[in-house]
Length: 390
Image (cartoon, rainbow, N blue to C red; front, side, top):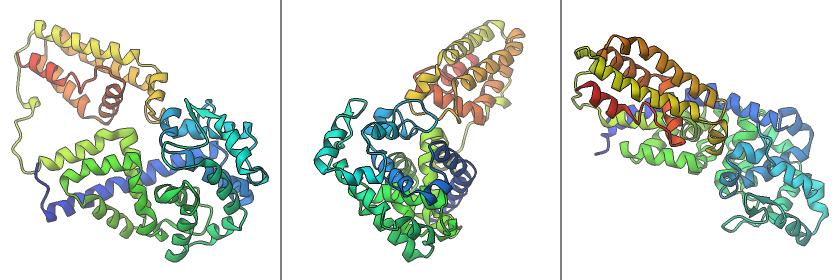
């Protein structure tokens, strides 16, 4: 599929910016603050205790592969809404959960303790690349004890925010992507300082687009134009919230179908579509209706079989989608399809099916079912439509 023209790509970027801004401000920021608060990282805690800043840096340093994947998502790694042993519990166990503890021990002792702790089957002393977490802990402890918290609280200008980014980046094992995350977490979302959303420059926010989920979103959107994410980031900066570009991460992780659908809509711009099925009247048939109802029963059965454990293992946020919500949605589909089937109203069944498929709940539930390998309205649509058409 050819890329959009420059003019059309700019229009697409405008609409994408609208979507990301709304998602970030109305969903992602409140959820992030709530998650951090449940993990003990409130504004008051970070301001009053340098250990909280040390802990934020250390946990963020582990929020990468292989640890986040082995833990089943960053929520488990950070012990947000989770009972599993994540980084906080493990480092407490090793007496390395405070800056003073990290500075009191030799590198050899710290490395030995970390090597005995594991997430999944991977020890905490190093990642799969170059990070040696003994150095990370010591550097984070030193940084937290240098008045860094006060500098963060007063940072507001472009220069000051870039300096904060650079100080995070200088910690061994952090790097630009995690440095950008830390500025976002501490100054934009938990908001411990004087910086307002419009103060954050693109130079500080842009590296966050290299995060795993955000990067996949970028690859998906690139089919519309190689510079569409950069265009969108510039628009968000102009609109006063550069960090809203991180909604690329949020949407891919929780509702990837939204971006996929956005791309499909723009790729199909100007194409001639077939008349919608709801305008086509199909003769009534109890036989066909019964066959269609059998498909609905399969979807309902698969939906009711999904467990919360499966969704958690896939890293799906239970605040967004839960096993109970999936089961309820599938039961709603089944119970409301029944009256149409009872009278052989094949057209009504197809209209209702497509209406549910296009709904926000239908898209979300369908995407979740696909993630756990179950039948969904999306996966069974072509079969349903083919039978309905006779």
